[in-house]
Image 1 (cartoon, helix red, strand yellow):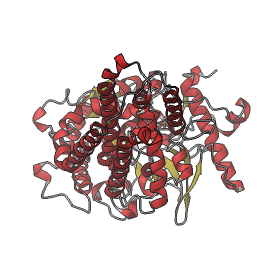
Image 2 (cartoon, one colour; image 1 turned 180 degrees about the horizontal axis):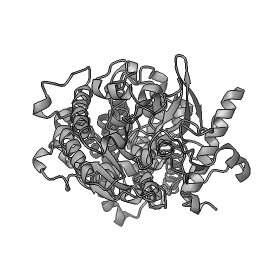
Image 3 (cartoon, rainbow, N blue to C red; image 1 turned 30 degrees about the horizontal axis):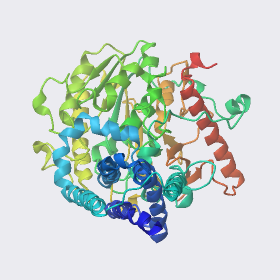
Length: 609
């Protein structure tokens, strides 16, 4: 009886084995990132696969072993087939997705992000490129799905009568076993995403996890948990997001601001401190700027970057702030702060309007105008994938800024240095190629910046404009020497003004995207209170330079041979020295404010109770 009962579980065993193959494919495709991935990590991952199968196939298992009256038996096979096929389809689709997509985000996909990517307008336009590049993955998906379903059909199961007591015993035993496996054991809380770090390592956690697991674990998540590490008085003494500006006098009153956010311009391939730069023009500007050579991004995607640089809201949740329920909160953006000072504000991004919900977010942040593909006057300049080619959009932005009322705040977000890395024909002979396709497109954008600069220099407003340069995130790479935390988050950030009066940055000063907004406020000489998770370069107090990854809080400190990282999560029992304890204390205080303030919608100075 037991033998027959277990035999019909063989198709699930095949799904489990194929899940391991999808993991091997992901690790192989990103082998330079997972140099330390070994047999032990694979076995831990196989355990997560078992948990995933138990979660996805519990309805199937319930019907498979449920004793039924004879008149209902004839329906069992077809419903079982439907449940098994659907569960297998989902597991393989989710796991196959990150085999292809992981190299661009370096993290497993959440439910909200997966839904967003499926419904995003750019996804459909890139489908042809995806099929051409990953045709073999589609073939393997069809093969693995077909073989699993064929195996299920071939294994016959006898009717399970509801009259026999032993059938009910087997049913209760099997279903209970799957429930226990699905929660990861008998521990108090079911296994979650963060356990991957504790069982393996931070660097190998994405490979240990599987995307079906991370997606199902993020379905229906209402949001953050309101943390309470400190009482209010102690909390605000450690970190308080309500800050007062430290007005500086380097720039004249009413200085314009032009913020250029550069797609995928990580330090690995751009900036004067890059070991292999493809941006000589940008580098020449940054060497004349208030340049932060030890700067980090606060997230891994473009949607993480925009809230970070505009509103000083970092990406400490599973999904971007833009995609989360908290995007409906009342929050301050740099445009809304500057609007009160008489600034006109505009956002330029050549993608389809609605792309990544940038138009909605920038409106909420206080921008007066949005210039997307719809507003651009010549659609012949569309690159065929993402939007208007950068050299055209940058030139268009100069023309529009020339018409703006002064002072103005403009933000230009480039897009060309993005898969499939299309280079306009007129630039193909000029660009510098490198070890990865990204390099040539970064080189192209650098040429586009040079054209933009030469055109802008001729305008009357140029000499009274603060230019801010920042990457949105680090681009994808398959290089083993660029897969550390430092290279995964390190980006160039610089502030340029034609007067050359801006101060030089202290050596070893770590700076992050969420520090940009308060620093601009101080450079403009504004006297105001604002809400920010970052701190100005000129502030006497500094917030932790911190990112969130796989449920861990990770700090960045500069040391002689690179960055020192302190990693913390609530389950860690590791012994800490005095310095680490202080860093963790500061990270916990910032994170407590983050969770509480987002949950309670207290993200402006006037709303704090």
